[in-house]
Length: 295
Image (cartoon, rainbow, N blue to C red):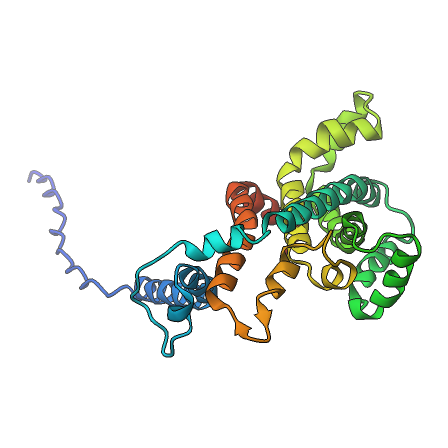
């Protein structure tokens, strides 16, 4: 009796599994709703500035209507009136005070922040707290001593008085921001430069500052915004020779009422320099703020 070979085993045919019905993506719906909500909130915050620009192109009669007029013939008369009413000297004073104080803040604050980040002392936290504690002092509490001191040395209604005050006002926050930027630089970069024989000043100017240039730009822009918008010292320590743009805007508040259209035109022109500078430096500003200073 001969043995027969076993029949080869056959695999059962695979039964195709039905594909599940596509589900509605909840994430996309939620993302769209969040985007719409974000734009709505942004529009609410930006709407005062948009209304200011819109009012600047109206006549005084249309600007005073209630309810407000949305459809009108735009005009540049308010801008002509503002520019022709001694507006430029105030802009010049604001530019001098802003640029000079910002330059002094960077010159003084960069070495201080560098020292507190690279070679911290035993009381570094106390030093940093002392810097930031000066921002907690109400300005109204020091304006009288500053006024008396400025009068004694003949510096009232002088633009350089504002330069010194704006420098002192912005220096603490600049030191804090620049120190945070310095701490973001990898320690290996500094050690490699020191091994090559670079001194601490050379490490600062040739190695660290090029790396943290966006952080320096962000610090400078914030100091410029604070200086350009400062009103309290300017209105109390200046009269006519050193008055800045915020002081000029107060002149539209008269006993006869508010000149809404001219005030909106002047405010638009006053905001334009900072907006242009911020737009030009937006890439550096975003990179700088993402380095860890503002969290």
